[in-house]
Image (cartoon, rainbow, N blue to C red; front, side, top):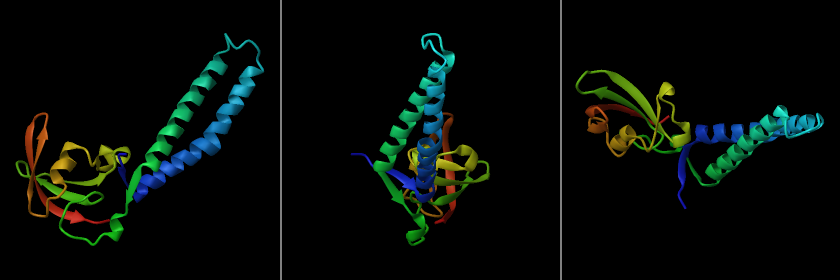
Length: 158
């Protein structure tokens, strides 16, 4: 069975979403279905069909989250002795060798990835090129537009 790596924050976010779905969304949708049933003929009742569709999405998401949490491997980066090595959960400061542009990324689980928050999935091409390298190493990332070289300028275990 495949384990899904996840940060402590990622696990908390999934647990919070699951809590929201089970305690707030599910009862609200059930009430909407009950209210729509009171309106009579279900064949032409748009509210009923919309509520049933919402219920399907909600239940599918609950199952998805429960499956991910049951197969998760939560990695608390704060319990690992800091070093210069890039591993899951670390925040990596990179310098583009060609342009001298600097950028930082945190390597996280697939569900946590957000390019806007500079969090990249451990399965992304950039993360795969970085994991296992150390400060001072150059990582070559195979991008659709060609290869990009990044020098690892720093690694933070936060």
